[in-house]
Length: 248
Image 1 (cartoon, helix red, strand yellow):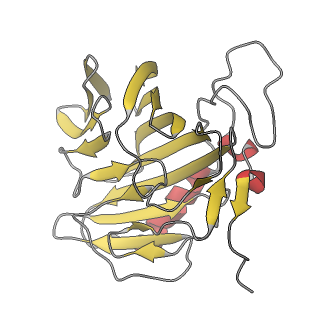
Image 2 (cartoon, rainbow, N blue to C red; image 1 turned 135 degrees about the vertical axis):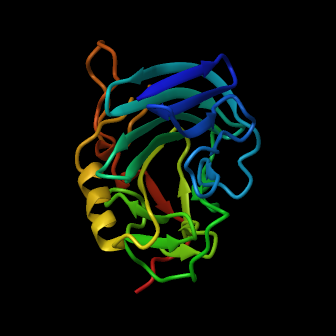
């Protein structure tokens, strides 16, 4: 694969001569568009109104024959975020996006997590109850989104905008950190969605994420070496504070 950088603006990821997508990492609302994506991908902290992001620094920009990785640090009005995006092949005519991030509450007070973290607005699927994964079909692609089993309130509900619905009655304590991971599989139309979901589960079981600095909910960093490449699942549900009683 190949990554082409436009400094402070975007990274374009290609496989051979085919552009897969463009990631506008320097935009006020970082997002993925173009290439073989059947829909733009909106990816932000799970807040109703996160505001505008400020890109701080790229921490990784790399490519191999089969994968491409972009990782960076950014700041929003209420949270400090580290995120990593990995694209890879997942079989003939099928490819994978692994989206991983950690968000740290920088407000000094509890922060409601009341907005969508991930959305593919050009795709539609009926709203659904709790499920590990969800599929959408278009004239150009079959797309499956898989929620990591360490995410808050896993398995999630699903919105009509084809993404996990906002969390329910959850706030993040001051200086606390929560992690989120999603696998997005993109295949030709008519592809068997459960097979794609299995590929997503396999991907979520393995790859690692650049970890944030600062307070971790369950496993503080004790080494003075670079903290990158720790598993996100060490950031467990101890980050979660309910503002309403849990459902029976």
